[in-house]
Image (cartoon, rainbow, N blue to C red; front, side, top):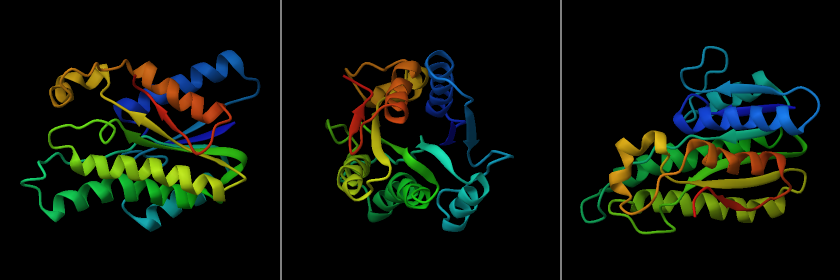
Length: 207
């Protein structure tokens, strides 16, 4: 099995790679090849803001059984103060980057394979400064729900993530009263998407 993980060097991406490896080793037969892509990768570099860079990545990796994106750049700003640039930056950094990945991946995923994108808890609940992320996360969830019906040969899901314990010091203050989750718990949602049978779903990595 060949799995392309984009954003593999981030906190979430590292946990996802470890979880996929552990699941495959314990429950699956055959070999597992994880192709770890990121902006800083020497073997599989990619700039998800750039169409050519994303196309070049997929041309290099060829056919895979699953594509996982754990990227997500978002700006936090109150709707009373944010300008259009704030929203545009978040749309481009998380929504359009992942849409670019999904569209390029369609012809590089084997029949029955999967594409998993990362959305988030913001939008399901209200957070100060969270309206840019809310647009993106709900947009991604709506995209997979709608587009999956028109992609019968592959599965398409989002994982709705929240703050990881590993990142709590930097981000938990933005989510008052919301419990950070261990990286392994969040990563299990990606394992479910890659190895399971669901499509068109938003798999919540939080309760």
